[in-house]
Length: 107
Image 1: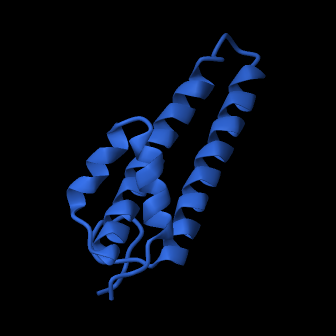
Image 2 (image 1 turned 180 degrees about the vertical axis):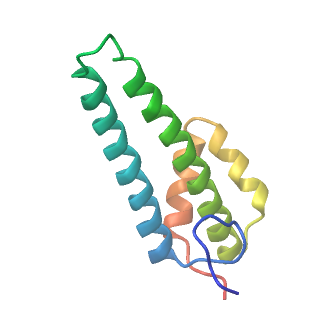
């Protein structure tokens, strides 16, 4: 099966998972900083709240894509998909993220 970035089907290894998470964090951070910088220096009105709004939208999209990558990784290590719900619990989410990064593949 061909692995696509925006799909939750299939499995991914540890290295690809880490690279994709770092890429998502970098893209969302870069877009947020650029949007805030652009709209803070806008000279045709007060649009400074638009920068953080665009940043929040991009972060939510990247969060959704990151959860899809986590589903692939959980499938690769043999854990059930409902473990992604643990990402909603503060404190536990960090432990689950560290576990998905460090766990070996089942196959």
